[in-house]
Length: 176
Ligand SMILES: [Zn+2]
Image 1 (tube, rainbow, N blue to C red):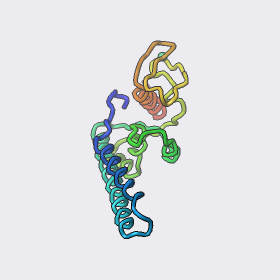
Image 2: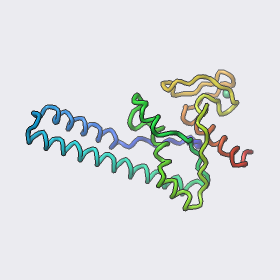
Image 3: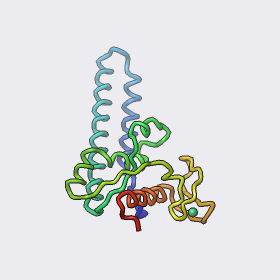
Image 4: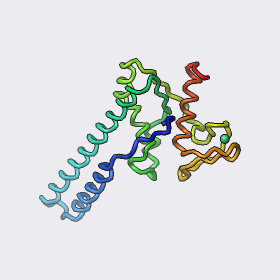
C-alpha cells in the first residue's frame, strides 16, 4: 500500500497448497477406474473448494478493513486474466491480492460505504520513481526499486502504490 504497509500472506495459503499436493499425489497413484480413485478424486475436489472459500473470506475481510480505514481507494485497473496467465507468480503473491480486492462484491461494499474507488492505468506504475518521476526497467524478479536518478530505495510494491495513488489523485482533481 502507499502507506508502506503490506498485507502478509496468511500461513494457511501454503498449508492448503501442501495438503492439496499430497491429495493429488494419492489420486495419481490410485488405479484408473477404481473405487479408490473415485474417492481420492472427491477428496481433491473438496480441498479445492475449501481453498477457494478460505481465500475468498480472507480477501473480503482485508477489503473490509481497507474500506473502513480509507475514504479513497486507488487501485490499478488490472485484468485478472493476464495475471493468472503469469504462472511464475506464486499463488499468494501480494499483487494477486490487489486484483482480488477489486472483486465486484468488494467494490460494491466500498461504494455503499461512500468510499471513492479510483482505477488507474497500470502502465509504468512499477517502472516510475515515485519521488522524481524517472523511469527505468523493472523486471518482476527485482523486488526493490533503486532509482538511478535520485537514489530512492523502496520496495517495488510500495513504490508502485505511491504512483497509483498519485495518478488517482490527479485523475479526480485532488493532486496537491
Ligand atoms: Zn527517483
